[in-house]
Length: 413
Ligand code: 7TS
Image (cartoon, rainbow, N blue to C red; front, side, top):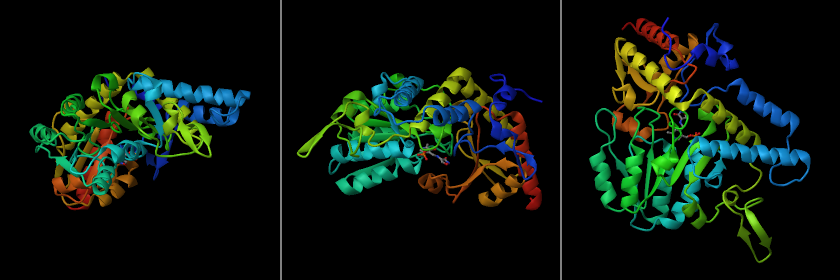
């Protein structure tokens, strides 16, 4: 049996109780990590510990439980901000997830700063959460969204990007890693070019922060959005990193408790960063769980996470491409892509394929993956997608290959 050189996968797997369950009597082969990831015991225990020992609201009460909850919540903010290389925890706003983060930028920054006739530059490989908010802003403000196209191998057409930049866009919003093609974009370069053109930059880190070392201080982006549930943390929590100078100039778009300094009948003043953007009781348990997940990943080492996924990808690209009728999308070189592998098998509908694989305990996703402009570019209504994480083994890839061969038999290919 092949073993990962980067990681002790068996040791990692032992941390994830869900991996012991059977699906249709078969070993669970979980290959839907781009949708959401499984949780290690340490994250589950952190949530149980909070609710069973020190559940209290944060930033409000001076009693012991309140102080402990506040300390854990703010400790998590420090951990998560360090994890992505933010220069200070006050630049890290807890939100519901990546979608909530892009919408925060939409309401609190773009609605004020995007003007009639402006352009917003994004790409054809974005998730809807990095497209629809900008379409809504453009419609409201009389601006235009420009989509940078893709080369045949699923990489960005940088010449088109450079053309779009010449029009001095208000905002450049690009994903660091595509959730369909796996393409890794050179966002450091993109942000540099965006800034030279006077634009503000936003990087969608939903598929990068969980899978590769990310250092925002080196990327140089103004905003960076990511979700905890895609990196072993709980659902309903994520973060928006924002450059302090920008956040300070922005008004809150949600009003309520905790985001104010003082409220009088005549008006209100705003709290300091990051609280100005965290109205109401936060997802305290979620944030603490997020911190625990970031610690777990740091202990493994993000360089090892990345190396393991590249090993799996190389193996998968080589072996799955041998299956009759396979079309695999995205860059050929595993070094240029994240651990996401989208494909179609002859004319088998991806939903049928996902159902056949599920019978064998294999979980993949089928559909448009919330990236319909990309599906249009690929000229397919949907794809199947296997996406990897640290607990996936070469065995999982072998199981997927066998499942695909079985599907071929069933469909008479
Ligand atoms: N950006 C990218 C690149 C994503 O992959 C996703 C979720 C999001 C943003 C939105 O994240 P959320 O946590 O706010 O939902 N992607 C997927 C996926 O590929 N399959 O299910 C969800």
